[in-house]
Image (cartoon, rainbow, N blue to C red; front, side, top):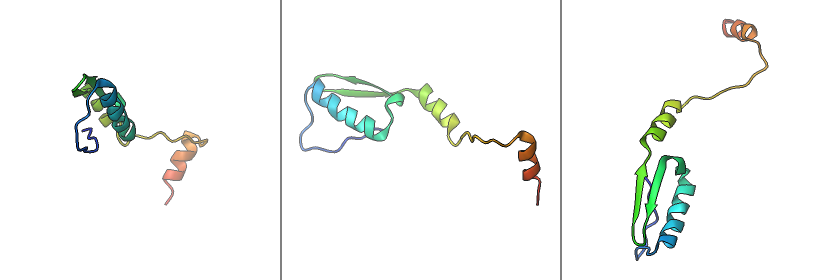
Length: 80
């Protein structure tokens, strides 16, 4: 979940709230997973569940480029 730094007074105004929300979203790198509605004195983040599910499904998957042929790769994998 997105959490901003606590302040002594709540932010007022859509522009100020937007600036604070943007800082948090940028720092956490979660913009693609949230839809935010900002009003003059309100902030309503909504999680994009489908985006989060897609990201979770790819978690841990990495592509590795190599110049090895499939045959060479298979041969080296079976050596003791």
